[in-house]
Length: 79
Image (tube, rainbow, N blue to C red):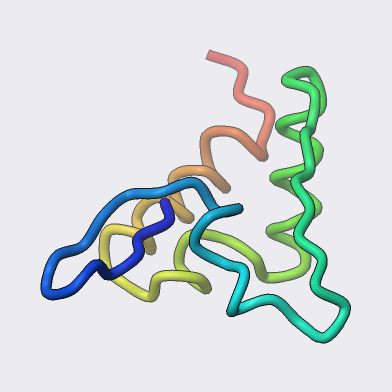
């Protein structure tokens, strides 16, 4: 989600419109697209690097989401 202030209001805008002044020295912005078939593998790799909902947002809801993801998606369940 990308939000930009317009006066006293906030507006949802594409990242390309909101970030020109926030870009680094190289001035580049890029988008990564991960095939749906590699979703679980990518989520596991990110979690191993401590990039998960709880590390990003730090709320109780994100903690529950992180625990649920680890228990339900990252482990093989034989039900």
